[in-house]
Image (cartoon, rainbow, N blue to C red; front, top):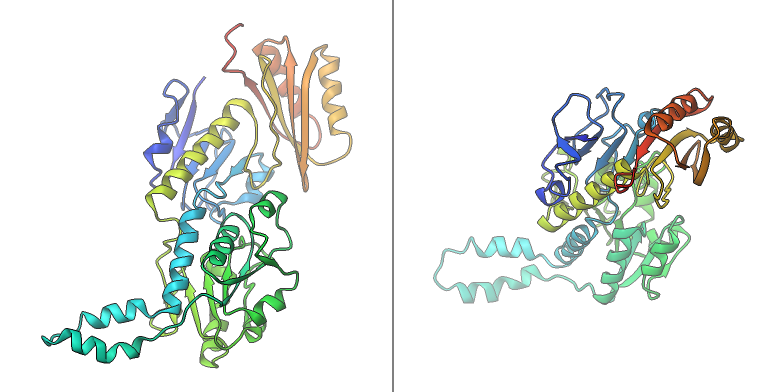
Length: 396
């Protein structure tokens, strides 16, 4: 058995070398078992019926047709947190750059042609007076992996930090300093922050999260930072708010023509995760996640199916994707019982309208496991069924 992986973009070799040559091939067929990518847009792609997984070396999955994948039983993975430190450092750097005119002053010094450089800079440095971050208020919208790190380190810089995230997970909450003030009212954060940094995923309900109404609530001296997704911010509203002096500046990692050339807007060329370390971390995590699913059926870090992990101790297991409707476990179990096979272990979880069930079968052959998989596919509400051979078992 081998799995063929279709690789798009420049995925770090540190990740790709985790694929065992005896089990995996790269870009060898037109019907890959899985896709591995970074920024490749897949919305117009027709997927092979053999494709069962897509793994993105990064957090956002806007370049993947997740809903279509869900309907086809294709698991979509991402790598939350793998590039968090890189983005955090870039956010902190831009906080500092927004407080002090470092770049502008450095560029000015390079224009001096007279010999008395020291005298000139001493006379003109008053033109580049900035402010300090210590004592200023930072509002962090979204307290996931990146937002939590930004909040914690901004506090260590002496800032007063507020965090807003009605959906923060328990695991993330443990990582947030108790000195970071949690607010439940977004308006409070908008109206009292000197700096506001966005760290939420792009979804229908977060599209243009910051628009005209929100910008009017911000202080005239406030600076907005967006290192999450460009579409979170209504750029036209930002341009108008700057013209009306409702905010002091906008810093974004997402270039758009309308934002270029504005003295109060800093635009970066999507540098958030552009570090050697982040690219390696994302590649390694995406490959590990993909291998775990292909070889065991275990799902972790999926954006469209529930997390299901179960020790694989039998020779074969069935992985059943199905709609989240009543009595599916009973219907699946009845088919296995009618075939007179024993279930050694079973795990089921749901996520919205879909569910995923892992079933370990005791003392069955590969042909028998395949026959069961085919029979389960005929059940109403079943989306996809895999039968998986335990590659670690050598005793059969």
